[in-house]
Length: 418
Image 1: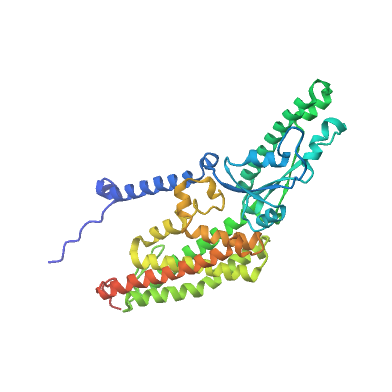
Image 2 (image 1 turned 180 degrees about the vertical axis):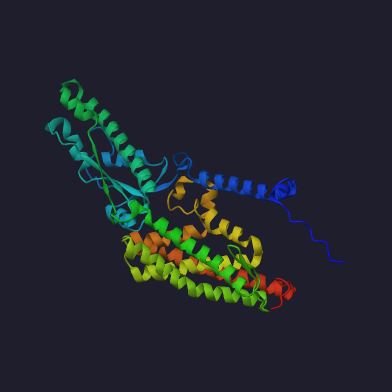
């Protein structure tokens, strides 16, 4: 008697099974909710979250205090603007320029030498040219960060001008002409200029973020492609291309040796992927970049650290490893990178993540190389350290987990005959 063949299932019949819907619906809904909260939570209201944004405050005014006052106007302004949403740093002009050049401040407010003398001379000299206060921007810190700093410094400068104007108007009294009163009401001209210029092909300070994102994606996607390709080649996963399906004979190999093979291939293939990233960005698109040998070495090490991390996570978590590594390297990394929205303008949860999330560590190094002359104090030194730490953690975690599984005799699957 021939065996009974079960009829083929149909989509119309299966779609009515509630248990078929349950897990995909829950997982998809949770992912959509988490992604929305994590991404929008980091950028929805930066002004409300803003605190301690590093801005240099320079007072070069050494003039004598105006009559009846204890301090000159530069010192008064310095005292008046302290606090608020900015983390003001009282520096000399040379120190401020150095911190602009190393990306340690987002901007600067400069009160020039002779400021008090030029202001107090206005009521009596008949001058029509107003004294100036200079606002310096730092576009290398990103367009949003530089813009926030510019807003804070400009508002502080205009506020100081109005306060000084009230003093001058009161001192001039009724003797001042209407034209003089108009000048004295707002006596200071606020001039904005770039404190640390970057190239015209720098995406207004955003190429560092997107280049970092490319490195992370190269490591993440490359790691997963290599992992799946090795599993398919060794017979531990099916290979489907369109309607064609194949399953290769299983090669007897333990988990530790499999992970070693994947990591070695990751190290080799990442050489190619990072070279192509640089070729596309710098060679074809003309992105402004200097220190090209250093940029390529850094790019390779950064993408490799991500790729090794992906291999370790996949080896430890199996089928859900790709989802776990997506959260580790991308979902949690993007909003905590500080590359688009300053970390001083995001909620505390993201500032906490930024201490160890890979994308923040990598973006600081890329920014230092592209915009700040590859200076170590611009974030490059810390980035190299964190790349080394991440690589060591990936190796230790990955091989510790596979060694544990092997010793427990937890085989990946039963080998299939040729």
